[in-house]
Image (cartoon, rainbow, N blue to C red; front, side):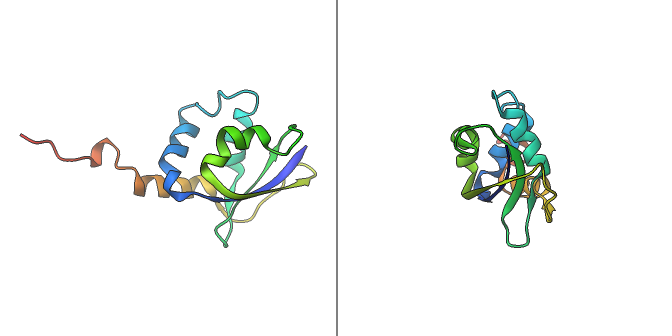
Length: 117
């Protein structure tokens, strides 16, 4: 079944979420990891600041496994609505916003304390 999903992203988790999406951790999760990654590629941020995407899920409760393993760590106020197929969503690509947030909060190795000598 396809669902329209909406949620508020926890901005302070951006660096961790980006890392898990990019390093293959989420993609390797069975049975739904690749769908989660592809869903985030389809996701947009609306003008109201809500992240919205379409996703396939066959759990008895919509996104039950996805929420327990991934989404509840990174999103608040999630809602699902059954729809027919993947939907187009209007807004700014979520992954672009995720990169901005992660870059602004993740010190990374090049922004750490200067070497002491």
